[in-house]
Amino acid sequence: MPEAVIAAATRFLKSFARPGRILVAISGGSDSKGLLVALHAALGTAEFNEFSLVACTIDHALRPESADEAAAVGAFCAALGIPHLIGHWQGDKPLAGIQAAARRKRYDLLAEAAATFGADCIVTGHTRDDQHETIAMRETRDEGQGPGRAGMAAAMLYGRRVWVLRPFLEVRRADIRLFLEARGIGWLDDPSNENPLFERARVRAGLASSGYAPSFDRGGRERAASSARAAALLGGHLRVHEGLVAEVAPAQAGRMDDPDWRRALMSVSAVIGGRERLPGRATIERLSGFLQSGEAGRMTAGRVVFDRRRSGLYLYREPRNLPVLRIGAGETGTWDGRFNITSIGTALTIGAEAEGGSWRQRLIAAGLPQGVAKRASLVAPRIAPADASFSPVAAEAKVECRIGPYDTFLPGFDTSMADVVALLFGRDRYPAPPVDDVLTEMAG
Ligand SMILES: Nc1ncnc2c1ncn2[C@@H]1O[C@H](COP(=O)(O)OP(=O)(O)OP(=O)(O)O)[C@@H](O)[C@H]1O
Image 1 (tube, protein in one colour):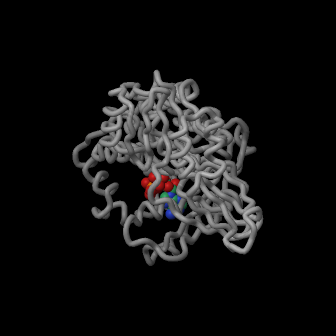
Image 2 (image 1 turned 90 degrees about the vertical axis):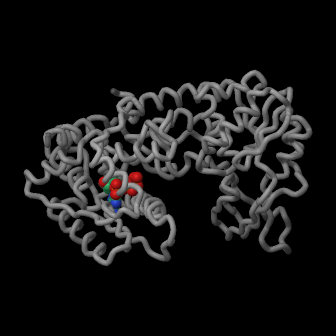
Image 3 (image 1 turned 30 degrees about the vertical axis):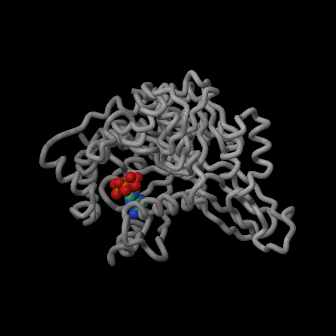
C-alpha cells in the first residue's frame, strides 16, 4: 500500500527529539527518491515545518552515465526547492572489492556533505527488501545465527560523527514504486543491481524466484537486549589497562557458554587486536574450548594472546607484524588499528616499544602479573620524532585508543555495548542519535 510510505515518513519525523536538518542520500533509484518525495510531502504540513531537507548524490564514476544521472537528480531536487550536492569519488579505484570500497567512500562523502550543510543526520532509502537480502546473505555466510539475524539496524553511527537513519526499513519496495508512479515520478534503475557478479544481486534474484522471506521482526530488539546484557557483563567483569591489556576476573574467564559474554569478549578482543571485525565462528569455537577447559596457558586468536592464569584471563596484542607509521606535523594517523595518534609538534615515527619502556612500569603498578606486563608493553606504541636529530621530548602527541569494531560503523542496537567498550578504553561515549527511538527495533 503506497500510504505506508507517507506513514513511515511521518512516523520517522515524529521520532526526532527536536526538529532538525535532514540530509537525504539520493542515488536516483526508486527507494531514495521515494524517501525524498515522502519526507518533502510530510514537511509540507504544519506539524513538521521546522525541519529542513537537503540532499546529496555520490557520483562513483564507475559507469559513463553516472555524471549525467547525478546531474538529473540535482535538477529533480532543485525543482522541489531542496539544496543538493554531488560528491565525487576521485582517484584510483581498487580492482577487487569495488562494492565495499564504494560503500566506504560513499559514506565518507555523505558525511562530508552533511557537515557542509550542517545537517543533523543522513537518511538512506534502505527497504524491507534490502533487509531480507542482507539477512539472506548473512545466512549463507554462516552469520545468520544470533547477532547476524538482526540484519541492518534502523540507525547506524558512521565514523563517530554522523547518524545514518533508515526510515524505510519496514517499507516494501513495491509500495514505494506505486507511490512514485501515482505521482508520475520516474526513477533510475542501476544495472549493477542485476549484475550476477555481485553477491547482493544474486541473492535478490534468488529471493525473488523462491518467494522466501527471512524473518527479522524481532532480530533488532533481541540484538539490542543482548548488547545491554553484554554491556553489563563487561562493566562487572572486565578492566582495561593503558589500552593494552584487558583483564577478566577468574570466575568469568571460562563463561564462553554465555552468548552475550562471548560477543562482549570478542568485541574487546577485536579492539585489542586492532581489527574491525570480530573473529569468525571457527576461531571462537577453538577459543571457547581453550577457555572452558580452565587450564592455564596461552592461545593466540585474531592477533590477540589469550593468557589464562590462576589470577584471571589477560588479553593483549600478539607481538608480531607490528607496523611502522610516519605522520606529518599536525597530522593524525592510526597505528596498528589500535591507536589514533595526532602529532602536536613535529612529524613523528611510530613503531613498537622494543624495550617496554615506561609502559611496563605502569602495567606492573596497575597490579598485573610481571609476565603479562612485560609481554603487553612490547606491543605498546613508541612515538619518536621522524627526524632523529630532534630530542625525543619533541615527540608530543595526542594518543587515543581506536575502537576497531565500532568507530566506522556502529549499529544502533549495539550502542549500549559500544559505549561501555569505549569507556573501558578511556574514551567518551559515542554521540547520541537525534531520534528518541534509535532502537526503533526496540519500539516494536
Ligand atoms: N550514489 C549514491 N548517492 C547517494 N546515496 C546513495 C547512493 N547509492 C546508494 N545510496 C543510498 O544508499 C541506499 C541503499 O543503496 P544500495 O542498496 O544501493 O546501497 P548498499 O550498498 O546496499 O547500502 P549500504 O552501503 O548502506 O549497505 C539508497 O537508498 C540511498 O539512500
